[in-house]
Image 1 (cartoon, rainbow, N blue to C red):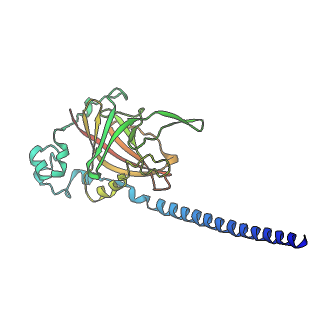
Image 2: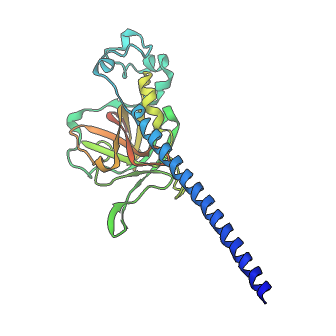
Length: 260
């Protein structure tokens, strides 16, 4: 009996030893994962400055880096066939006419809702959904768009004064809600390299609105608010950086033309 008890005690001692070793290894792995995540988070946040860019007034008034003949500079977008042939990437402008700011509706919500979004320079094409209010942890919040862009319905619609806010996922590895704005982070570098970035938004009546992007900025999620403007503007919003998502990338531009 004594020998049997000693054997059981030995087995229990070995079991406790292996449990201790396993717990130590699991704890070490979790610690390394935490250290790795925080290191990645800090590095990712340090790179956010690269996502900010503002087109200078000098560049807007003097487009010397576009390769366009000076004969078009006084009216660069509306030289029709000659301008488009000289700049095939801008064929997207065919059929558009410049807006008259004085004719834009001042009230928000009276124009038709947006239904389609296109950014040719980064190959983005998406449907647009009107977002609804949902209850999250006993608090109301706007739902997150799944695989498409989402419009905050309390913000401006295409062709109205104010800011049209469209939201989309950069990545959604946990919820699997798509990555419609995955290439939005390319726009700041394109702007810095002198590229003109145009965004097309179509409404439910098949009227197209052409916006020209002029800036991008990054703010912390706690500082994000829906801004107002007397102009007709567009702001695209995505959560950054990847795997952290505690900041908001905001890519903005101004309405320049409409195609009926």
